[in-house]
View: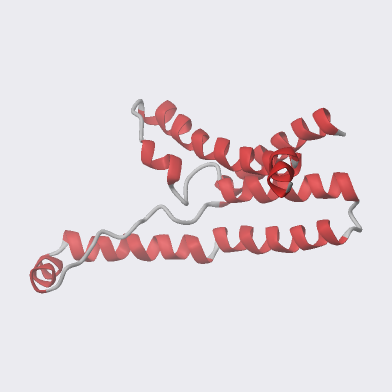
Length: 154
């Protein structure tokens, strides 16, 4: 019975759709800019738009629309969404910048080459966090997906 609930829960479904379509938008936008396809962006934790922001925006707006802005569901979702957005803009972005610097040191200098001869160093993932514009695009995408759900189900 609970499995049926997963497949009939429009708030869950549209939040997942918001995230997955935002991930695909990364591939599409990259193709428009660079004229080549980068499928790795479909699973990337960074880039434009922020799929995390899109998902939590859709979730929060739908919970607010369905249960009210004074409901505990909206409150919990709003707090968690705020943490996720701040994390994407600050901590995860900073980790991406550190990765970029470390890659430059380890892969772009003679010292890094000597160090790689002694120990195994991997290339660090650089596209981790988001710029303000990427988060704003994720918010807008989440708003659009939430609006579609509201039109269909409310």
